[in-house]
Length: 157
Length: 442
Image 1 (cartoon, each protein chain N blue to C red):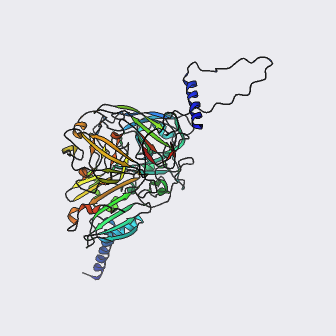
Image 2: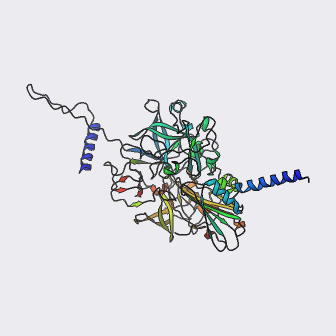
Image 3: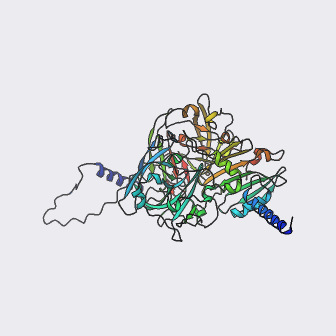
């Protein structure tokens, strides 16, 4: 490979590395959390638990987003609560398309029910009303050993 | 004392208006030489008719026909009238959903006549460009223009009130990516919204509050700068529930009288039935027909709460659910109870007890007021199989919709809770019957 090609390849690789975190948080690496923080203009703090670390993003409007990461940095769950539903395209990455695919309004009798996803490898539960939304997205296969879904609960203050 | 006098005056006025054979009465001949009578004092303006008819039925014309049509259920509708500001071009829009869980008036573009749409001016932002809005609902988003209208519901009016035209054309035809990033469906079609519009009469005075008073940002920042090239930048709009408006006001908060809250009064339903008729009252303790009486008052979280306004605590099955609420805009009881039989197949997510189930929950206000509520849960599959619009006792489990046994944190008392009750929703910062909102009472 010529030096020129190598530098092009390096540039392409750098672009991919630079671009990738901005596309994915759920299922992505820890640096994607920083991309979320910049994108959302949020304050970031972290709490370490035995099986995982909770990265807590606080948005200017008071919204709180919690990203659950394994020790190797992979984000396996994202939870939110606050006055609005956050930018899920940013926070869920490619999984956002699954949310949209699974929440097409049904024909026939219809309930204005909260967004939900029920898949073997991806679950999303949500609720609330305009001005007060909450939800959690979870990739069970990526969760660390010993993690329980009850660990997704907001610690009581 | 003053209130009693006002009430007496209102009664006298009602008597005068409803008496029939009106005209000038009580005039007496004045004798020659008598001193001239004092000039008549102008009568006080008549009290507004502070109520409108509520209907729970199958929905607007056209909803049940067509390939995606369906019979609506557990939605309370009202009619509203819009006029071009200061003009006589008006339209009455039927089947507007009454929603205590949101704030602001939103109307489908398809529900407006072309002449009406053309006559309604679009609000401008600080750049002098048309103003757009993205408003998130629990299942999707409403995007469109912000327009101004002289608004009327029952006898109550608001002049020059901003409201949203969902699915408007022109610069508003393309939904900004940031708007759809909240997820869910675009609610611009009649079958998506299930109503010709939504009148949000929740606990806050405007639809976004301080969060939208700063430009840029994400999430709750929902107002868009919409030059002819389309909507992109998020702009700041001030929250004001009186003129000059910027954000969409709570239409009730913007009324000149009876502006501290609402009462939804619906009769009980013993089983599935085709329709129910009730009353939406404006004001709490402002007229003879909207007294708070002995209702239990549960103060809710305010808009300074980072989790949002309108939240109370509900204790169910020994668990404390801090993000609970009472919401006429939800069709059912939404709560987590894995011990109740779940429906399967196309009704997965709903509850399917084999016989009616008597349940209890304890509601706690932020004022520590506590009220116990008994309700009956019925088989959702049986209810949904009917062609009825009133389905009492229907419930669902958010965890069953997702299969994720997430931590329960919310109990949503939807419209079935309102059947057979008078439910009061008081607006933040407004004195309503002696207590300052926000609160729910019933």
